[in-house]
Length: 112
Length: 112
Image (cartoon, rainbow over all chains, first blue to last red; front, side, top):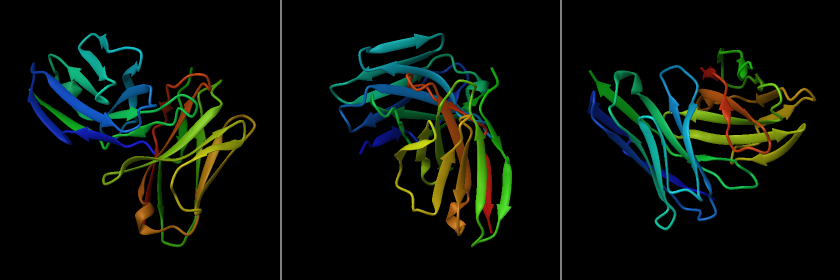
């Protein structure tokens, strides 16, 4: 089955810095890659996603890049703010089942 | 639209007991998936239901079961509880033709 590795497990940055979280996947048939943000005590919420026919997608301060050949994708957050502090999960799934396999999560801490 | 709701939000049980958790999906969503979230294992897929049928199943023992009703509401049951079943149980719903899942707030289960 699919295996998703996520790094780092913890990321500490100063407010205003950029943050990058990286994930690799094993199944070359995976074609949908969502990113979820989970604040403490709250539900995971989708923040951005990318499909395998696209190399990059941006939404304000958040961007995701995908390298299908290397089977890795990354989340980039620019100009980080304290409210960006949360656990971020990457996931990979493929058409048909759409059952995502999640990475272990990255705890992002943004210091004011 | 109202989001995904789960009841109860918190539960304390003792080893050997059984528990039933409930999930009401977003109106119009017929696919409901269940996940177990623990600090050590992250988000792990339990099963998915669609049109009252289990469509996909993860690698969990038979003590974990579920069902879906005609109104798409879903329940999951864990029998003969073990200490290791302590976790946050999340359900997620989606429109069948789309990949994006929307999570509920979760039920936090503590097994003593």
